[in-house]
Image 1 (cartoon, rainbow, N blue to C red):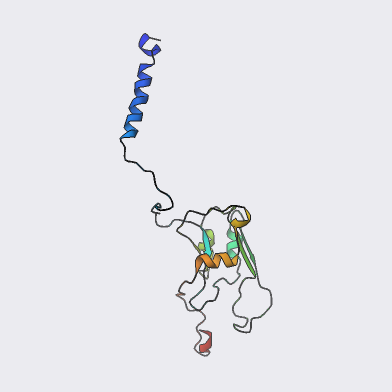
Image 2: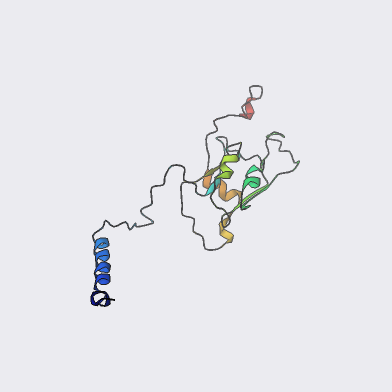
Length: 165
């Protein structure tokens, strides 16, 4: 090694150059709770369930989301043969619907496969909880996240029975 290389001056000067370059760069630090990142279109976040404009759960227990989920994070328990006198045997609402967010990989397959447009993905990336039990979202929590979404299809509108609409 030459004397210049043994003094490590080129390395030290190079390190200072990198530090000075970063010192004068625009800061990208974000004040997280007050400021949030702008998410790109098509961002896949936390899944949630929705109700239609009449307050009915749009999920009909077809279990396609459960079957398509790669990490098996979704568990749907169908209602069985019990009929609801208000809606007859036409509409099936799941007895239980759970999503284990510790397993979810945010792939979006559940939203794509849902024929009833009952499950959607949020545009939010923060899901902080204190325990694993809180990361398992049941149907009530999922519906609370989703709220009401206007039904474009109006599949339950019946011209012979206007009470069903």
